[in-house]
Image (tube, protein in one colour):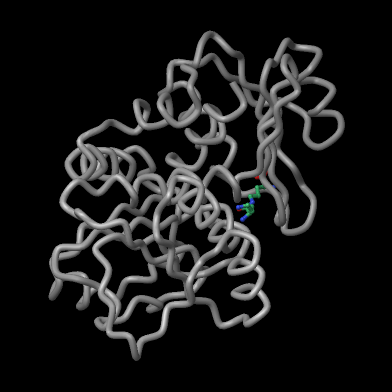
Length: 259
Ligand code: 2YH
């Protein structure tokens, strides 16, 4: 996933509401109920401490406020530390945080201080977006396409393989394909096979990764973006249902996964 920009997080609430209603329509289940089933637990009264991190490219102006919005929207108490970095970490623990959220340019983590559970955004995002794709109620197939086998794509492909799906994948990196074939039994997607998928989990940082040859009419594409891998004209022509949102869905998955 590319580094987020403040523009990506504009209108987070509206972006999330649109995705939430698509998720419910295409899977028959609300996001939080999917997370409850997936992780076997519901959120309680955890307090979320959010720490701004200045490393690398530094603070993204609306990143921590977006995380606070998400935590509160999920019914949790949350706070953003006044200090950044190590001083912020100290402050979050001193002020009673149960779960810490913090991100630099490479890693975004949730750490539950009460039970020791730790998750990366890559892993939680891969799991929830692949899970959403796999729940497409109009699919009637066990075949699913994963585009991109980086940290997000690999986590999703593994999750789908463990759920018993027939996972096809593509990635320009030969080593990634071989590793996923060896470790989790994915099959390589070959356009010559002319296979068309009704469930697609896209996990690359690139635009236009989804081609007409890959998708069935009225398929579901589930992707954290950014940018969107589905060309707009292809989405329109094939009447694709698209679940794509920059932060809310992945963070919801992170919080449920550390409970
Ligand atoms: O957006 C990111 C990276 N893409 C995380 C990689 C995991 N998907 N990081 C956000 C950086 C936030 C910044 N350090 C802040 O405001 O605290």
